[in-house]
Amino acid sequence: MVEDEESEEAAEQDPTSSQIEIIFFKSDTCAFCPRAEEVLFETIGDFDSGMFKVNEINVSENPEAAEEYGVFALPTIMIGGVAVTGIPEPEALLKMILGSRMSQSRGAD
Amino acid sequence: MNEFTIERIKTGIPGLDDLIEGGFPKGDTILVAGKAGTGKSILATQFIYKGATVYDEPGVLVTLEEPPSAIKRNMMRFGMDLKKLEEENMLSLVDLSPARPQPKNLYEYPSFDLSGLEAIIHSHIDRINAKRVVIDTLSILAYKFKSRDILREEFFKICASITKKDTTLLLTSEIPARDTGLGVFDIEAFLASGVIVLYNEKISDTSRSRSIEVLKLRGSKHSSRIHSMRITDEGIRVWPGEISPGS
Ligand SMILES: Nc1ncnc2c1ncn2[C@@H]1O[C@H](COP(=O)(O)OP(=O)(O)OP(=O)(O)O)[C@@H](O)[C@H]1O
Ligand SMILES: [Mg+2]
View 1 (cartoon, each protein chain N blue to C red):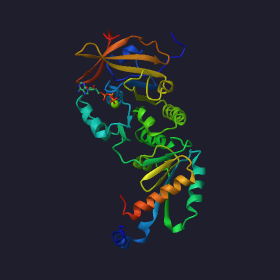
View 2: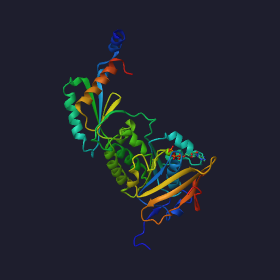
View 3: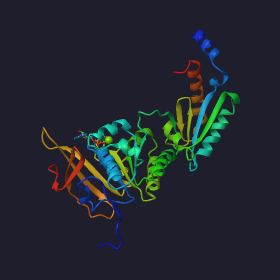
View 4: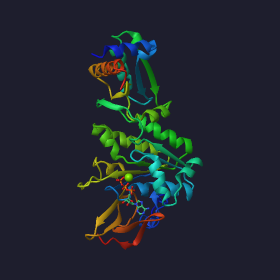
């Protein structure tokens, strides 16, 4: 397969850059957000805690971030470049985590 | 005449106010519907521009379709300098166009609200103390999200929260080419207390004619005819005395 290229790239990476970044968008008024947050943490709780970097953004306090990312609907969870809107099923999050892992090991897109 | 008079704001479209007893009811939600190329964006942007320059009302223009650079370029042809208004804090142009990076939505579950969009719009309203808001165009959101029931409910909420402090809201919606309704949702009309329809109909093999119809407007004895409208070097103009040849 493409092992040679992969290992070279991995060697150059610092440890935090191999973390998967998760951004959780919520707001003060969003009724579905607390449940979505629970599902998120339950799902990633099965993994090594060092594997993820979770960034929570409250758009009521930080509307600029919602504008910057183009996030209209809440809750929205971004993993890698893709997003899920609404209270996700754990399977959807798992697929996104795996997808992000795959594109990382391929050296991103 | 009436025991309570409705406060109105001038539309900034020459001729239109004459059809609607002087202007849009202040703090109402007005829908401007029409097929592609009928002049919805120009009318909406002119409403904001004239509001800021002639009536001293700051405006927020939320663009979900055209990028701001294109809007500025187009409006400049009518002598309307949006960049200058932005610098004077009389205009906030909110770029939510597809040209901006947006997350790719892989999954959508029917348990969300649009409080993100709401927070974005309100932050701009608050920043310049806007009295007029345009969302151009609502129809885009119908393509972005699948859950129609949620969209419908959330639109109601957003419109209500924007107009709560007497800010007048103008929404545009695109009528699909073969459609007879007022937009992709068929719900836009219910959101609005006023509905205006723009036409650009073929009147012969070689010519088209633009026209405007006020379908409904709260508390107004508006004209029920279809009137001539033109896009001139100074923007959109309505001829209240002229009944459209197409009607
Ligand atoms: N300077 C100008 N003079 C005359 N007509 C113009 C001028 N600039 C644009 N137009 C006309 O205006 C129309 C486009 O207007 P506008 O962008 O407001 O339409 P729209 O209803 O928003 O369309 P869409 O649904 O595609 O967004 C076109 O038909 C174009 O020919
Ligand atoms: Mg348009």
